[in-house]
Amino acid sequence: QVQLVESGGGVVQTGGSLRLSCAASGGTFNSYAMGWFRQAPGKEREFVAAISRTGGDTYYTDSVKGRFTISRDNAKNTVYLQMNSLKPEDTAIYYCASRLWAIVVVAEEYAYWGQGTQVTVSS
Image 1 (spheres, helix red, strand yellow):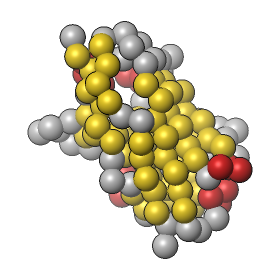
Image 2 (cartoon, rainbow, N blue to C red; image 1 turned 30 degrees about the vertical axis):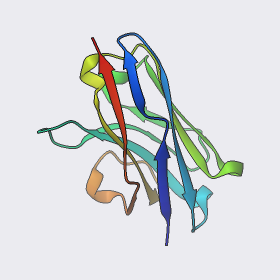
Image 3 (cartoon, rainbow, N blue to C red; image 1 turned 60 degrees about the vertical axis):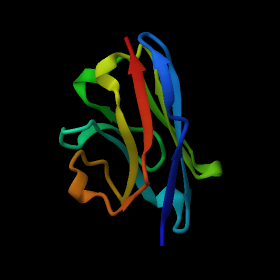
Image 4 (cartoon, rainbow, N blue to C red; image 1 turned 90 degrees about the vertical axis):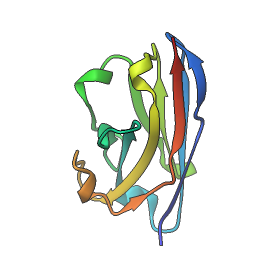
């Protein structure tokens, strides 16, 4: 029903920047809150950031506050994650996800998921 496709991952040096994109198709994009999660090898999936349906409310995990910015362009059915001042511990596969209504930080509450995009930060 709802398809999400992440892009923009890659390999960067410590202190570098990347902007991830998540393009949505199907459904009504502005009906969904959007979230970004990440998972490193051998680690549990971790919440990163979320944004409300209109983009007026955002939430970040403490480790990325001040470095990452989530945004959305409802006209383009796309959500972004701007990542600055990247650190090696940011290395992970990044997934976008969507759910109806309000922002939540629990992965199980998100109904739709993309395939992920790899972010590698080298030291």
